[in-house]
Length: 177
Image (cartoon, rainbow, N blue to C red; front, side, top):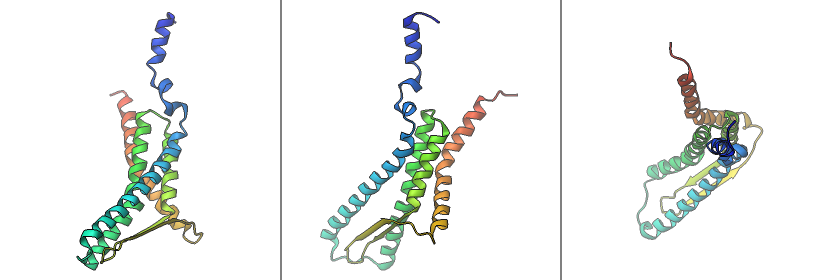
């Protein structure tokens, strides 16, 4: 087996013995959800700040209704689709990089996507620069099948990079010929 020094050096080189993610893999289930909530709150606070600051300078400049509607759609799409998928995919890639078991990252991605599918976010930018934003979490049994469909769609999009990397690493380990 070797001397004590050789054993210590061998064990010190093993990433899974040093990494918190291997000691507490449940962190990759909860961290995406907590990160999403934190980023969403920070983004909403930034949006409120920007609208208030813009109102000081642009209160006399009306926004065309079509532009306001497009901005509202863009903001809603960001909070409901882009942000949760980006956070989920990022944590999936981090879990892959840490060589964590696939089940932990998939569980975190699915949990985040179900939570974000239950969100109903509405951002309204008024033509006279009086911004309004509302958000909430609600479960309606009549809309639950549709919510679960959207959660599955988000999870599938977020899992694409992780599955691609997993398949690539398996293919790289196969013998050629």
